[in-house]
Image (cartoon, rainbow, N blue to C red):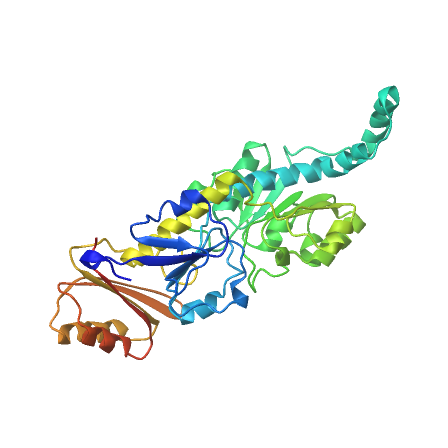
Length: 399
């Protein structure tokens, strides 16, 4: 919907409660935000399962206030030319703290010890004697000097590795796709494993910080668990499917694992006396929810208003500073001569290109074009009709 002075009013639907600190980044003068809204331009959500819903054709952007995007049909949205934004790193501190807590819970048998005390009925001296008599069954071990393997050196993995190093642990990391930014943030004291098997060898602790994709499903399996030191602690705050749970529970039974701490409960893990199952607490802090909401709201806003793409899981990163010009954005199949065809349409309409940015990722490409005069409907229809064009947006001049 257009307001006066050619200003666009954007409609955003929320499928979950989004922290108000994030929604404040969407001023009411330009954004209508509600849970019940028809024909939305964008959707903001946390855990809502979008696989089971009919996503309106009007939607041009989706924002997940968190890191994982398993609840969103990412490939389908890419085929529709719709970027899916997330908030990597916004909850890094929250997950880091819980990962360190999970290591301590496993090493010091804290949950079992708490359950033991909770079941005591004695009072006075009898209670003191029962406490002293029972504590010997919960003897644990300390972290300094132990080896921690960190699988995945994104924002969270880097923070966990650095924190463990500060606790006096030897830390070995593995991530074949580590970014330059994260590599700079990683402490020089963290060793790098060339292979996963090398990381598992001699590890006393293992923590996982990777998405669940085909390449990571059952990444932790019986063979790799067999490479770890006896009595090791496995901590999984990534995704449930990254660990072959039957193998982990068998390793608990054999003594290969001392403890298994997971954020993804199943009936089997809940029932096992050496497993600690938590209710997906990784990012469950007020601070993390605020940070995620702010990050994703700002990136969705920038995309809607300026066409810029930052932290989208199915689009290439593309950011172009605004000029005093009319902006067009095009998402298309990544095939030859798309930019040439788009440029020809613009030239045929008698317009000059003031600036242009083209980026690609896999099967998808994205182009931002600034032109010197208002695009005609005929020209826009001409570009939209090019074979392979998925979406075309006319953003007008900057407000």
